[in-house]
Image (cartoon, rainbow, N blue to C red; front, side, top):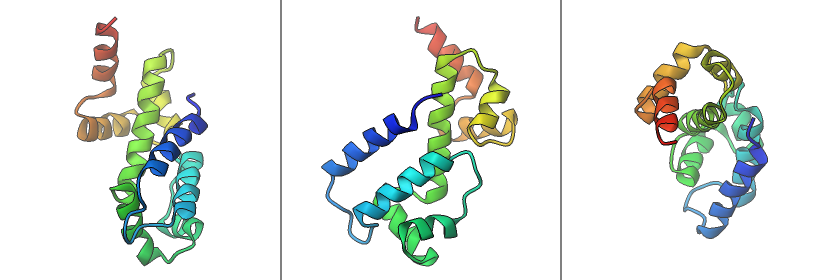
Length: 134
């Protein structure tokens, strides 16, 4: 499985290059939330949990998160799960149903419909397009 530390380093490097967004989370809070999401992306995560990690109220958290990361928390989590699923699909050797469970989706169908909705192709289409390049 890909290293979440590697992905965290990439995101952290990008954040250091950008000025903090107005009304967003402080840099330390954003880093803690990102790390928490990377460590728990396969679990069901509540807004209250993330708000506690950030040290702000739940009502303030959603808007601050969106201003900091450019999307709502749920969308960020979906992207994180899909990124990890795509990395596992590239590595190969693991059934799509297993990848779905490893990346926080309830089953293969859930992964397929979510990937089609947000990335424009199913896991099978993604694998096929990757193998067609080589």
